[in-house]
Length: 589
Image (cartoon, rainbow, N blue to C red; front, side):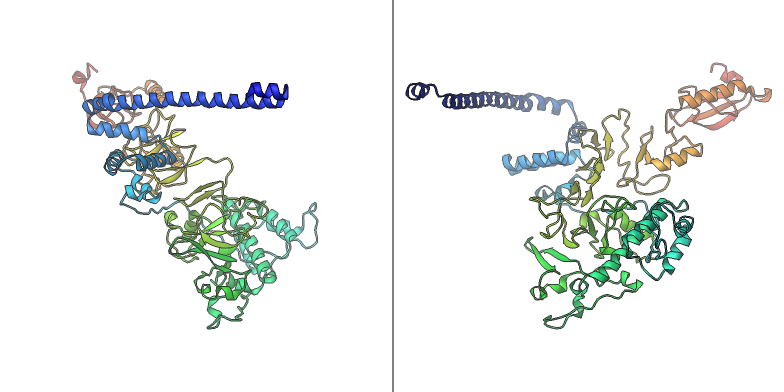
């Protein structure tokens, strides 16, 4: 071909270049094929040696428990994505008997973990016949509900000059501010007034962080409610119970502007998408379309209160990031039991702790099936992004924006923090903060806990995180608070550890061993013992002690500062008995 091109067309540089490119691609493909073939041959040879030579040695030299520990250590560094790939390969390449045998050994190595629950929730039901859901009890705060903002904050002042009313509000206490807010009859309708009031609340030194946030959120809720009542038309405010029998030409009455309207369940979302029995998503309601189209489905549309539908913000006073104090996200979760909307499960827990609110059950993250898009007010099945084509996240874009950067379909966790790394552990079956298993964490099958790869002093205690904190008695397994591991292997909340240590305690409240390396503190006690000799009456007194660090007993000289173990040098001891004039027995000590 090359000779023909040169003879017939002369020196055609374009044709030669094309031929050279084709030759280069051909040579590259040939080289890749040879390397992959060699790699495949080497891999198959390695697998054959592993099965014929290595595995018999493992079975011969290790007992069943040691084999399970070995498998657990290997699988503890495998992410949920890697395990899902292993399951897919098992289905495609193994016979049913071999596949069941493989999963059986995996379950034996991961006994005591939530691996089977992860299998069921991830869609691998053929490997698991056991499903369940978990609940969590986390920290709580009392939420302040401010229904009406203060109207008279700033009427005619500029940003450069502080109005006396602003100065007055900034000096108010939390109770005075709430009382003043509730006594105001005219809600704020100006964005300028709202911003100035927010600045006054944010700089009030007498308010705590949670009080500032909830007060500001209450102001935003009131403005949003006022705008909705004044600017939006009836279809969004209609109740399906007010429609006539055939629903033709029905008109829904607007909600009352009183403060009680906020707590009445009579407001509809802008749109409602629901999964049918076949799993297909159908449009059940849309306020922007003719009502006659939804005459049969309107009765299935749930109702909400104004406070549930109002947008909430992660950044408080700034109001630029949707979410709540706990997570940044542009959606809310619908409670699987009560049907209420919450920004997250922790917000639900806060509502439960408020005695003035209707008590709701814990929000089971695994049972959530529907979410509410804050951007377009659409209720829809739980997913990564909004499915409403009219949502602002889809306008002028080929692909819609997700509700958050991180989304877990098992935990229904949404988090849009840009600098936060989150991964789902298939053995804990919850999402953890970190880069992932095998990267910066591993899962200890015996402890049933994720452990840092840099923790070389890890001590295993079976199911140690499945209990409660020994200080506050709150759950540790799914706590959002940082945990503090102790030298003995037990754990507690970091805040509880700080509070417990401030009291002068240095022993674990569970096993009484030293919580940290106490060499420096014990050296100070040594100096105190040398500087304060015992009176003559106690010179020959000997104490029989039990050391709580080395778990051994010994006889030592008595001293009121402390009795030091002569085996490990610890002062973390208990006196079992005391003998006077015991010098003969103590002579060799």
